Image (cartoon, rainbow over all chains, first blue to last red):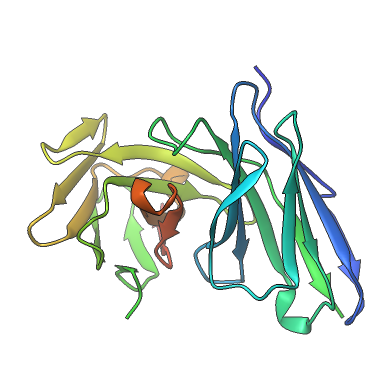
Amino acid sequence: ETGVTQSPTHLIKTRGQQVTLRCSSQSGHNTVSWYQQALGQGPQFIFQYYREEENGRGNFPPRFSGLQFPNYSSELNVNALELDDSALYLCASSLGTGSDGYTFGSGTRLTVV
Amino acid sequence: RKEVEQDPGPFNVPEGATVAFNCTYSNSASQSFFWYRQDCRKEPKLLMSVYSSGNEDGRFTAQLNRASQYISLLIRDSKLSDSATYLCVVNNYNQGGKLIFGQGTELSVKP
């Protein structure tokens, strides 16, 4: 059974650029959630995808968007990067609403300069 | 007010000490409760789920009080390897199952 994998592990971008982060869900999981974790804070929910449809969104602007593919892998896209977007981006997969728990990937550390 | 609030850290304790973390949540409709552990610059990992009846896993004991909307984690006989940030997490299936995290409490166990 493979876990959740994220790519890339680290990324440096310039303010105003666009970035795409990728996540492969754990085998058997059909739900993917994305979280942003700023330094010294707990992870904040961005959005969640279930069977290729967005089914929940946190308090993030529209320039944060995503996709889920038929194999349940997912992408997080961020347009017009701002300095405050610098954070650890975590992907978590689960089966349905996560009553059996979530598995997190090791994250992508994004630095915007 | 944050949806999930935890004790501010850091907690600095000697090996062998007992340490308790507290957490409160604001949404009475919350349905599942967890403690996650996060090591420096790593992803959060599930430490244990929390049930109303209380549950224990070795040196770790978790309690939930739904009436007070309060969650706790007790670590007995703390080890150096327990040093990490402990995150209180709440899940509400009616909101699509998103996890709501507290800020985290940093624990440092010293020799």
